[in-house]
Image (cartoon, rainbow, N blue to C red):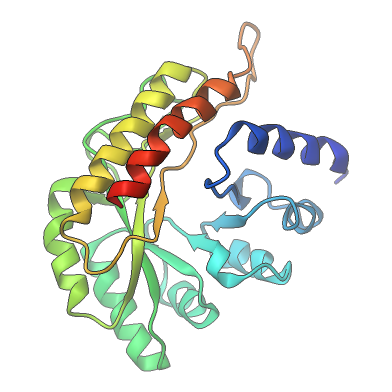
Length: 239
């Protein structure tokens, strides 16, 4: 139950210094939900990503703005969705059924849920420890189905803010990560044509791996940052 506050701060600072200033850095609480760590990181990062009611409560307890919390994951329960709606966090919607459930719960609670669409992209993050795109997956809505769903969202009492695109995790290959980021931006721009409102949020995840095993090498963060800096003008101009 002991962790090094200075080490965690140094790692966040190292990553942030490599990224364009426009990029908001979130911590995925599922990586380590230790309350003391989460509380410490609340002042180091720009927001949290959560995947359960317990993680959501932990994030809210830090005092961070609910608008800086994203709730993702398939199979959210009605109680979890109600908590997310009441709290005002961003809900990453993973299926057409979930879209309808969120709208119905919002009506019951007298709230307009803040939502983003989680897209299952037609590509994968190559050489990832866990792939979340490029085929059948429980994570998100298949890209070809998203335009029709966006038109449905326009008819519902939902506050649409953008897209969540995450094609894989635990990756140590810079070229693969950069390629996935480029494709994610291209897909988001394509989908924006059907968006019911201005896209204010584009979450493309990171996928940055940790060198766990002998022979693994730390990822070159500067190369990741340079690629994002190159993409930023396109993002600003077309989203």
